[in-house]
Length: 158
Image 1 (cartoon, rainbow, N blue to C red):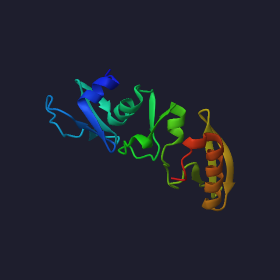
Image 2: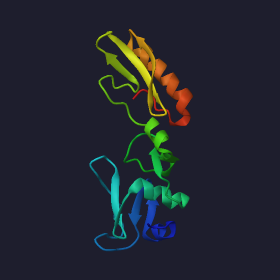
Image 3: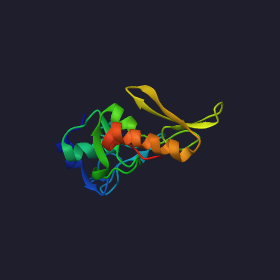
Image 4: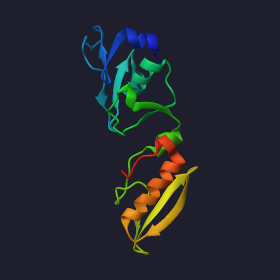
């Protein structure tokens, strides 16, 4: 595993990017480290090992590489240090983007009842928050619950 000192010898940090200081292997001075992988993260090779660039940026500033690094805005390619924070796996998941037909986190359409259902995940278990005629009401209940339970890791409706 690379150290902070090695990383700072090889790269400069410039606006969320790691820029090579010198020519090495196939990399030239001035090259930006990283290319998007199939999940949207920037990855790059340093000392014959692949790393996710956001993890290297975190190491560059904090001197250690935590188990999880969360992108606060949810943009996997925004590796500015102010957009990165240490997180647990649960906290990282709490900050995930919405999925599903409603495009609102914690809200799904229930065909049988013909209502919008709001829920939240607590300790890996789905907790029902209510059923609603209007999607806006379900979204508000889900958002309020996330803010209360997930604090700074609560993502908005999307």
